Amino acid sequence: MGYLSQSALKNLKKYSYKGVDESLVSRYLLTPYWNWFIKLWPLTIAPNTITLLGLCIVLFNILTLLYYDPLYLTEKDGASGPPQWIYFTWAIGLFMYQSFDAVDGKQARRTGMAGPLGQMFDHGCDALNTTLEVILASRALNLGRSWWTVASQIATLANFYLTTWEEYHTGVLYLGVFSGPVEGILMIVIIYIITGIFGPTFWDQRFLTYTRLDRIPQVVQHVPNIGLNESFMVFGAFALAFNIISSYRNVIRATKATGRSSLKPLIYLLPFVVSVTFQILWLLSPSYQDSAIIHSPLFLPFLCAWGLQFAHQVGRMILSHVASTPFPMWHSMWIWSVIGVIDAQLPVLFDKPSLIQSTPKRTAVFIYLTLAISFFTYARFCALVIRDVTEFLGIACFTVRKKDAEGAWRDVRDIQQDGFVKRL
Image (cartoon, rainbow, N blue to C red; front, side):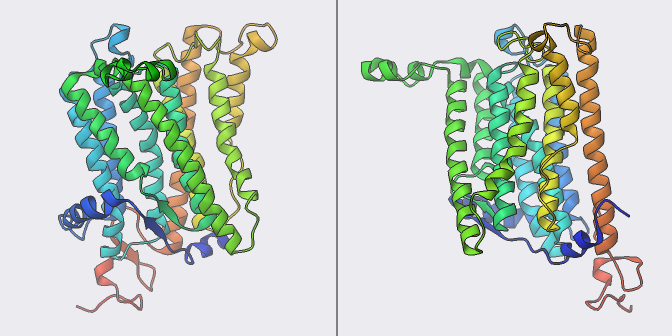
């Protein structure tokens, strides 16, 4: 017995991808570029390999951050930070990730490798990239170790979760006029470029002062003069609210068309709320102002562990969508998170010192252990799913090969439509 049941595996053959992209930027600017870019890739390169290469570019950007700023400090914390030219490499890296992510599906259709495996692999890499870009963008915005970075993480993950939740209930991946994979990524690319030109402290300037709106008394009375970086976070909150309304509207439309309840899907938002609650409660130790994790070098590994757990969570959601299995309502890593939260909050809950996270050193060990376990459980999930799907569908993950009628792995170009090998 593998990770997936036989009924789930059989459902994979019924899956077909459906997507709607209403982005004007995508339609008139990026699509012509993507159609040119895909022609640069030989047919011997598997679509999942393209996806993975794109993620590797972002991981390289993370490595440059760790090299120049391993403590994740900002200029206002007294750190010199990465040289400004590094931010241009982040801009190039993210734009290339978007390009690779956009053409992997085209490559799948060109090579005859399109299917549920590619859909899951693509979404999995996107889920990982979400947290990685939060880390990089928050550094570029000079937010660093702050609750604003936490807010950015929550908002970004919420948008991704909403899109996946919406796709599960509608069967369609909707990308609106303004979406994260298109306009959202381009905005972050622009942020990296601006930071590369002016430096991260540029974003500490006050919004009303920079825009000269502080000269208007009515504006000053009603609008707080927050930083440009904080203003961007406020904009993200409005974007999230818009996406929540838009996603739920699409879900209502889909459920009414099939005679299903439009309220029941709201229950499936609870796993995200529960996960975020655990992370926030953990970060609130010992207090909001003096978070032991946020204001320490442990903030970065904590965010990475959070991102891995989220990728695992939405990975199971995507799997349940393509395999037509029940929605995953809970995550095994919640048990570990509960242990971390209760231990960290023992002084508040029972007026007793923490048992595990009693010293900075022991806290560091526990956080890095959380990161390692999060990585292992997600990597195991990916390996098991890839193994089951490739064996059942007879399609390779990182090479352009399929199984022929006799069960032997062959190059896709050597297999006829009936499954037998072409005669030379």
